[in-house]
Length: 329
Ligand SMILES: Cc1cc2nc3c(=O)[nH]c(=O)nc-3n(C[C@H](O)[C@H](O)[C@H](O)COP(=O)(O)O)c2cc1C
View 1: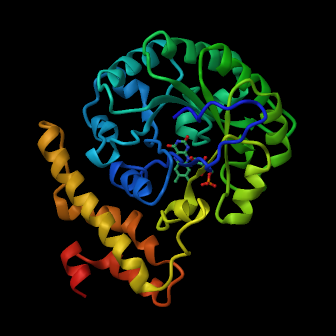
View 2 (view 1 turned 45 degrees about the vertical axis):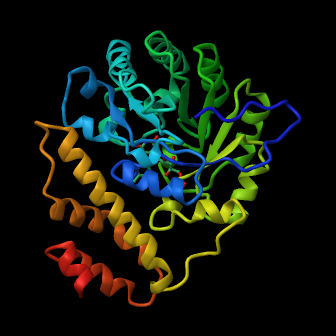
């Protein structure tokens, strides 16, 4: 996903709206659904470069894509802190020609288990390391490269300008910026003023991210001059947000209006499960009912949040023994 090239004075006619990488959520079925709902592009959840470099087979589930994604293949996101592991991981990923549109380096995840290895948001404090890791990736793939990062580690340490310059000089074609500092994790204000300054000085197109949930927040993000907008949490249970922000579909209504999208999501999950079982011989894939119930408990109940009776429905999702039982209730 490199945003369309533009003259410096020209904005793309259509808003570019991307689904953010969300660990445990942005699997192939949800990405496919986001595309059906108008997303311009999607990201895989982050995949460990160390796991791929050491041939950890279950990680292949995270690398799987569906035929429904072929018109707009996802960007594959990797996290890691070792040049040699990223180089190997990139070679593994690049074997799947056509499956991905680009590769991305995660330099924004604040989870302690990621940061303590030197990866994720640890890199937002170290532009030189970002340059070195992206260079190792660049030397091992012909796919476009992008970086996803934050404004810096803390409010008193803004590193975004150096991070963007590091990405540009290592050969990346775009940068996604979550307009928060690592110290904020996923809450607190987004700093659109700092983002706008970074966009103005950036030699690369910048995609803006952080708490876009409606037209007002999307318009404020667009006003920073970003080339595209990335949406994460607000798309969960509501992938129609892409169509809505592109100027189309109305907001989701009650239970009945939401049901078709929920059922389409289940259909995609079933078809993905069948595909995994066919393609990944030797990798343990949970039984279909367990797979669907796991997704229902982490994900699917969100389709009905805000609807009268949502709390009771969530309790049913948690106690159901099978998706069949749940749908029959
Ligand atoms: C549950 C969850 C999982 C996430 N997983 C990833 C990930 O795998 N890679 C990544 O770069 N960012 C990840 N993020 C950060 C999001 O991509 C995004 O930057 C952040 O949520 C802000 O955008 P939003 O306000 O639209 O959600 C995750 C965030 C959440 C809440």
